[in-house]
Image (cartoon, rainbow, N blue to C red):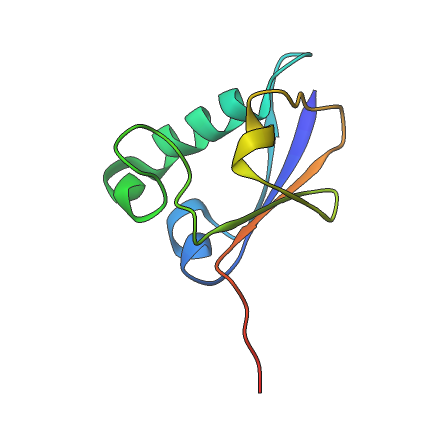
Length: 92
């Protein structure tokens, strides 16, 4: 299945701005994050902790809905899902 990955700000510099990646049916959000960690290569520590969790200051969204750490293990992806990763946004 094809999943769209959109990254913003410094996350974009590490993962690229916009890409479509292929995953098997039933891929979990945890498995997706593991693959993104590998994709980050030497810069993985900028996005992930040593135990493989996404840094808590980064925002993860699926189809416009924010996903929290406690939900990552239980969610699976569907064909056409859009994943967004970005640091918190502030304005003024």
